[in-house]
Length: 283
Ligand SMILES: Cc1ncc(C[n+]2csc(CCOP(=O)(O)OP(=O)(O)O)c2C)c(N)n1
Ligand SMILES: [Mg+2]
Image 1: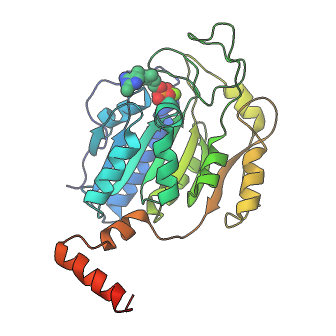
Image 2: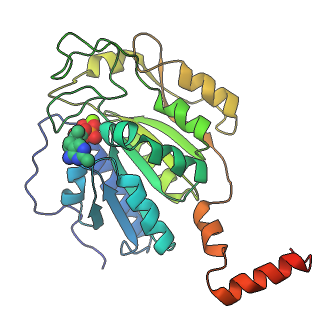
Image 3: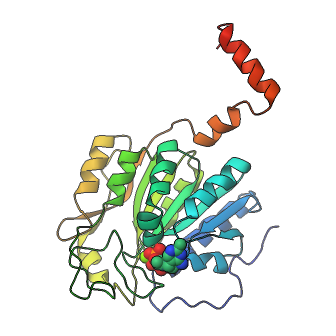
C-alpha cells in the first residue's frame, strides 16, 4: 500500500502542548519519506506500551501492536526474531521502559537486536496522572509524592552506553528537525538504536523553560568515541544543573542478535551437521 494517509481518523486525546505531537509528526515524516523512496511501509511495525505515548499506535496508520505496560520491547523482540525482514519501531514511555520494563531494555541493548526504541521521556507517569518515574528529578512533587521524591533520577543515556547499545541519542520534543534526523538514522541503523526524547508533558511536567536554558547540539563530538560519549552523557544527570547535550552520542557497527539467532541451526538435521562439523574440527 502506498500514498496512504499516515494519520488515522481516531480522536486524538493528547493535551494541547503535549510533546507527543512533535514525536508523532517527526516519525510520520520519516515514514512518508521512506515510502517516497520506494520502500513499502508494509514491513514496518510500530510497537507501543501503555501510557499517553502509546496512543501513537492508534494515531499512526501503519502496522502496530499495542502491547502491555512495560512489555513493549519483548513484543518487539519476538516480532523481529519471527520475521527478521520487519523494521520494528518501539514507542515506549519512561515509566514503561525505565521502570517496569527496565530489564528488557538492558537486554535488548546487550544483545544488539535490530530494533529502534524511541522513549517518550516526559519524566512522569502521564496517563495515570502525575506519579514520579525513574527519570523524575530529585524532589519531584506529584500525585504519589506530594512532599517530593527522595531519590535521584536514572541517566538512561549513560545506562544504554554501558549496556552495549550501538546507536545512542537524545532528542527534545521542541527540536523537530533534529528529532526527524535522529529517527531516520536510528531506523536505518543495523542494530539496537535508542533515542531518549525529552518530551514536554504540558499537564504534569511542563519544563520547557528549564530545557530551553540548558540544551545544546552535539556538533563537535565523535560518535565513535565511547569515552567521550560517557562524558557528554554525564554532563547532565536528569536533575539540577549542567548542560543538556542533544544529538548522537554513540554509533558502532556490531553483529546483531537477530542475525545470530537466524544463523543458529533449527532443524534436527542442521543441528546434527553442526555437531559433526565441530567434532571434525571444521568450525
Ligand atoms: C502491567 C501494568 N502495570 C501498570 C499499569 C498502570 N499504568 C498504565 S499507564 C502507566 C504509566 C504510564 O507512564 P509512562 O510509561 O511514562 O507513559 P506516559 O503516560 O507518561 O506517556 C501505568 C503505571 C498497567 N496498565 N499495566
Ligand atoms: Mg511518561
